[in-house]
Structure formats: structure tokens, C-alpha cells
Image 1 (cartoon, rainbow, N blue to C red):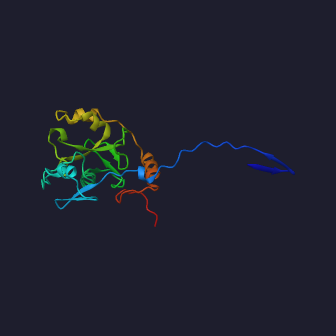
Image 2 (image 1 turned 45 degrees about the vertical axis):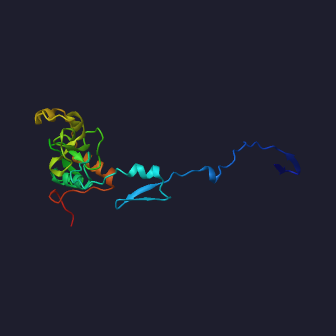
Image 3 (image 1 turned 180 degrees about the vertical axis):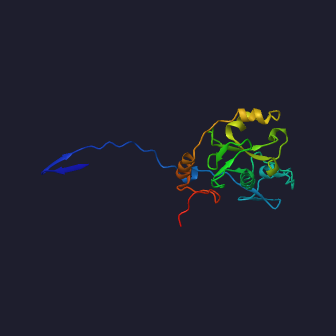
Length: 194
């Protein structure tokens, strides 16, 4: 590299790291893919006996008893809708869990006092289904304490609740930070600017 400046020429050697040769395209090997479409094996290459033998005993069941461990999105939506509303607050954003604790819609799965989980009333590990009838909104700390036990009374669960005193102004600030605005329920009363 030659640097010119003020009429003088000086040579400076630049250090360069030796580079490894670029990988050749022939060294990249993509594994063959296969999928099952309408009970027929479809591959991107000619099916080999090894691949075909892997899928020989595969059976597609039309079993309607499929029970996922977590609740489907639609069940979560309906479960939130059936929880008790908080007076004066937007029901899309605020609810009360099964024990009366206030929870916030966007706080799911965290350990705070406004956080909630979608709980299996009858635990999944004990045969509970992931259906709306078996779903309840529950403060996350209570749900974690409950685990898969069914012998806990309502009073025991209330004792495990994280007590949280939240003023209306606190709720406004939480909404403002999460949604960028504050919405109150239709029946909130108070003054209305006309």
C-alpha cells in the first residue's frame, strides 16, 4: 500500500490474515427429504429402500382424542373471556383470576403479581383435557404452587397468591407502557368530555 502525503512517498505494509479457501459447493451435502402426502411417500429423489422401509409401518390415525399439553390459542381466548372482569377497566386487558387476583393480559408466564397462566383445573398429568371447560385464568405464582395437586382448597390457593396492591394510576401506567394508550370500560363512570 502506498500512502502519499506532503510530496513524500512512503510504503506501508498492511497486515492481512491468511484466508481459508471458500467452501466448494460440492462439499455441501443436503440430506434427502421425504414427506407423506395423502398416505403416499413423496421424496425429492428416487426413494431408496432404506427410506421406504422407515415409512412402511407408519399409520395415520384419525384419532379425535388428540389432547395437546398446552391450550390451543382459541381456548386461551375463550378462557380469558370467561374470567371475571375488573370494574372500570378494559376487559380485553384486565381480568380477575379464579381467586379474585387482578391479572394483566400481556403478562403471561412471568412470576409477578399481575402475571397469569392458563391453568388446567384437572391437571394434564391426571387426565385433564386442554379444553375450555378445564381451563381457568390463574395468577402465575398460584399456578406454580398448585402444580398437579387437586387436594388444595380455595383458601390454600388464596394463601399462595402474590398480594399486589395496584392503584388505578398504576394500572394506567402499565397499560400505557404495554399498549401506548389507556382504555377504560364503558361502565367506568366518571366524567366524559363532550
